Image 1 (cartoon, rainbow, N blue to C red):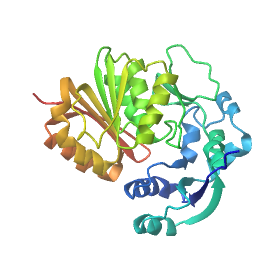
Image 2: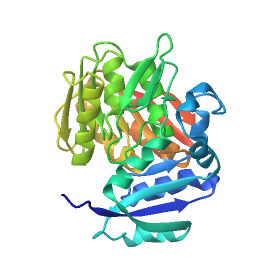
Image 3: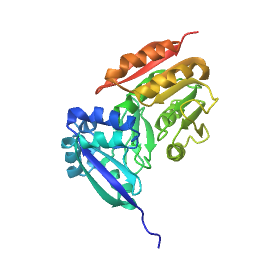
Image 4: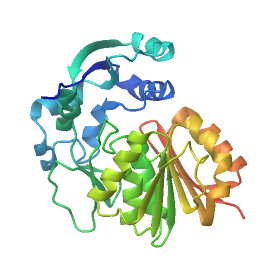
Length: 306
């Protein structure tokens, strides 16, 4: 019988007003596979989270999500936190425990429920039931190694802009694809082809799983790329749900990968970094045409000036 692996589980308990900044700091420190327990997420689907769609989730779990913000991440037993990450963790109440792989790979499933990301798009964890409303675009998501199911503001802000601007027949380039949720959204909005790239091989595997779940594997090509450095693909729409420093780094390279309308949708921008990101996008030759904002985060839609 194969012996299960053990992992280190870190759970950090910030105050509600500190949660977004904590996620930003951990991501910048290289810990980007986070399970985020955010009380605000209970409001995304049915206002205050009391509607029938929340019947899929255990009441005790729901109350925990509502009342106790937390961020969880995992390390292999032989990994150690970088000094930068360790200094972040030490600022908060936290706990470290050792867990078996089968425990941590599945226990977070109870926290995920269907979430409406935009007027038409609903992200549904693959193991949950959901009765679509007329006009709904339902995205099936299996988060894999804790990439999340789309409840993050950075994801649904990007999805809202995609719903507004992606047109049938567009070619889309998804930079930093993660679970592949934006690629799946693009496919169901009528894109003719999507290239999804990520630097993390696990993200590429997760994208492949999810495009198959959504029946759009024939439309999506995946690959490993450090931002746009290792791909020559182009798109009518380039979407990037990353972090503000990466958006600023990416922006100058985007025009060379634009075709057609040359639309650039960027998300993962904490509000204090919105202005620097807008500046970087404009200096790269784009005109900002729309900004979506929510919960201290921003997403930008911009079109290349010819």
